[in-house]
Image (cartoon, rainbow, N blue to C red; front, side, top):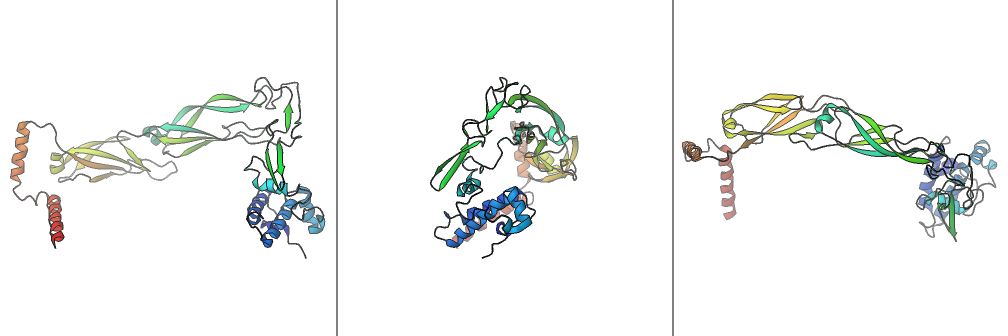
Length: 378
């Protein structure tokens, strides 16, 4: 029976890189794994086929031979079953799929290859004015950098490293019991594959030291809570000469005593006395640019919104500035003396017994309440 094309088996293009090949293999291997499909001969055969294809395409030399000569170029090299040769049998396959869960990586990674440093996060709290206008702030960030004394090697200058006697340079040790195998980081070399005879006295063999660095961060105008600013290369130092990670400055905005922000719009409450609400008037209201005049028409009710266009926030990603929404709140007078109370009583009497003309919402509400109770009696 003729074999299927290995690229077709994994569902990848011929030009696929190792990352895509491994991703496809993991997905299919987990799908057809015998433990997930007990007694299913079809799944077992597909698992064998997927494992064989991956064994060839994951190996640079075997893949080159297969690309040039097809199956004839690799016949006898692929495993052909659960205990296949060349890639270490099923225990290697198991490690490739599940190694990350148990601390391993399938045994194929070079423990001394350059590794990118970790990214860092810094939480920055800004006041609203600074976030809207933009600013520059200095922050102090603790991070690991490459040790200058040993140039990141970890060994004291003048000394050398040797192959780890525990893992023999693999960086991992494997515990196998019957059908299953679990890989974990070597406890002697901590995954490097090498043993340092004389550790650097400055970094204690780590190859990195901790420092606190002061950075100036430019905050663009219009940032909002949840926005992130990335500083390339300002994260942790890499390992074995790998590049630095990045620093992400996470922005959050402090609560403001006047304004609330809603995206590019601002909101605020404007208290007015009931005389201005009834007769109308003119008020000064605050904006982030200064004070502006706001005309209050007669018979203004609590909750009415006034929109001041362009007095909001200009978004950091471009676009027009938002608006300022002023919500009017009619304030009831407090601490009245007897003369003022008497004037209010006379004013109330002047409205007449039925004040539906002057208080339409109140009359409408109580008419509705009356109808509600009458309907309940039916």
